[in-house]
Image (cartoon, rainbow, N blue to C red):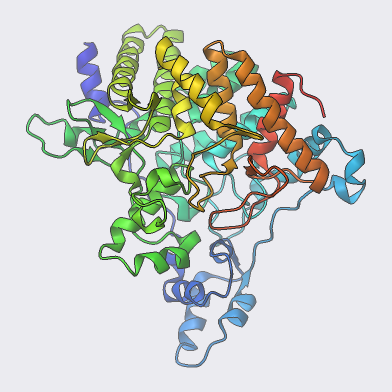
Length: 529
């Protein structure tokens, strides 16, 4: 019975199976030549500006007007200005317009920012690229005026500390709505993000809400969690046939001995609309630009956009090979998802189904141990499945094995030593040891990675090191807040007086997940300013 259900689950034929829902058109699909012409004209320094612009009249009328002017010399900037309303960056703070920075504590700043960053369903405009949501939500800040999937979980940590249970519930309901509407949670609630997701943390959001409202929350979102799981396991039937030579399908990879693990993937192999010119500039030089576009999109799905961990040559973004890699952090998130679904079935007294997911947990745990533990490095590393070999690079993603409880006692000892001697810096733990110029590399540190590492260390009884990392991270956040009046998306954890750099855009302020993690850690370790 259990094995029969498992086969049905992996073949996608159980209730709530993944269905490819009709997707709204993206800005490029709507605007056609006009989109390409605007982006390639480099009218805007940031390609995201135009995809977030709101048309002032119907798309049909705008296209017709542009087509009629096509044979003339068109001033692109004037045409856009007349026909579109451009987005504005999220307001930095209402508090500092009233009082000087010195009189506003970082806790008060965070509390004031929840109001600044919150959006209501009525904030969606006709013809825009926004995917409508039924309830209120929080945006990260800066150039990001939509909600982002994995960002939101770390934001919710702070909302919980602030007592905003209603807003937590609204955001979980929104993500459930996206699963019901599209079969998965897209990278962000924009049409141009459809085709890829983000690190899968919906089950963790449900768990967080259940901590506040009770265990009935698991049952309430059971169908949504299962539907998201099916999305990440799509295509298994194509690689599990007895004589199948195919070793990957969408997010699923069949490992050398037949085990199943996961990778990042995107349905599309075209330039990202929000980074159109940047992608074109790199892709045009390549023999197989479609391969590059799919991999750069998959790198965006990872949340680590971008990092040397995805690159064959750390100095060249066009060497990205995300889809060739089985990442440790993704598989830990999916392990957590399987555990939470199993627990949900236990609550419902559906013991056969709970046992089935327990088996999935065991299988994934064993596969992670077999393929992702790198004995030589003493670290959990990513796996290059296209060449059937472990990658040697140590990244802080290896610490996710502690968070997921996958490491053995001996492995944990080695991981802890490496964190303390190799990753711990003045302002927290490093992302990688590589200085590539990409933002998810040295010397940058990121709030979600600090939080996961700290909680993983606590899980293995390493409270002293966990506390030290938290103290260093909070100290850096607070000191820069006192200097600038802002909390940032990322931080330079080695040169703590400098703002972080790297990536496709300037460091952003606001900032949802930094606010959430900082408040959660300050409360967890009783850290004051």
